Image 1 (cartoon, rainbow over the protein chains, first blue to last red):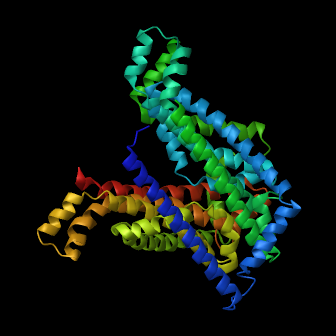
Image 2 (cartoon, rainbow over the protein chains, first blue to last red):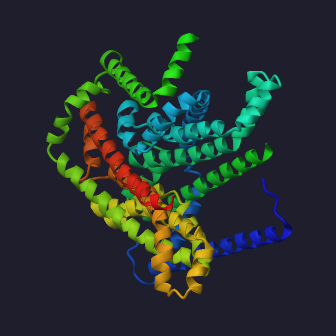
Image 3 (cartoon, rainbow over the protein chains, first blue to last red):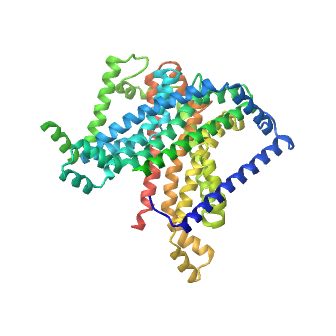
Length: 262
Length: 258
């Protein structure tokens, strides 16, 4: 990590604070517009429920704890999908990176498949695995496999050849070479891939729950939409956005710590 | 060990051929799996999917649905590029505007848009407008971010020298900013195309009355893997062609710099 002087640091911090303030101000403006539109300017409550009503619904959802089964299902689907893509992505990425010839053949192939919107495979997964959790896990794992494997390849390839040669000539065993040279060198790039993979796995799972499912947090939003319970739907949307944002923030901070620790 | 070395050597010498062989091996594996191991209610061999691709097109409504989806993609992409270009330039060119609006754009970009898909249906109905709107919001943000980044990468010395030589604001825009923006613009278009494809297809799969989402649902529910795989292949091909067009554009228009 680059060290910053105290002056640069305070400037940086001021920028962060001013952008936080702008964001807070924007949210306030948006909320007051929402309040005005739904309370005073006669926008249909089915299209735009009153913010105070949404707040009451949100409090009700949190108080009754009715979100737990859906949330736990979504999170366990996410865990399943991410475990699969992490394992496969790291293993395949490492194996491909072992030889420049393999990289030359497989890297463009994998990147080429990644250029297709993978969401297209969702109907196929629903056909194979049904409407339950397995089809979500399959889609999440497939989508998040690509950034993980591509970044793993890129990470290992980016390790300085001189370091590898030096370690070898000093008599490092293959295991030691991996442990002390390759992994630390590749780690930042791999961690970025893992973060990207996690984020899009979450999106894919919520998305596939929205499109075709029986339960889960994305399904709940759709259910409320179909029942025309717009206020509760808004409350669920806010809930899911907060959950997704905190998960992503958590993963980003893990990535930063992991990259800094090496 | 000798064979192993031979394969690697071959791959190193002929990466294109090796890729072709890998793809062929995959197809052979798929063919065998579909013929001998997997229930044919779920998986069709590629030979059959390819052979009956005509049957997908002759399904009543499919050509029209493909046309409608293509139209949705085109309209959404055009709108996303126009809006993204205007907002990106407006936000990127001014220091004050960048500092005050960039945080808001980043905040909005961070929202998982899929959660608000039901809202789009509520506001825009189940027809084409909701798909277009969802595609636009998916394509808009990557384009804005790319353009803002591109504007920031302009070398200040170019602006200063143009100014000191007495160029008007319009001349600076036309002869300094615009030529330098072109590679960025195409990079943004490429990212935007990815976003638009995702948005439109998500909305199509969610609910559809005329586009292809309707038919993926029908083929899934009637356990017709041949036609489903055929339709998915057509759509995947369409997506690859669209991506390739913008990628070529990007490569073509950023050549002048080198």
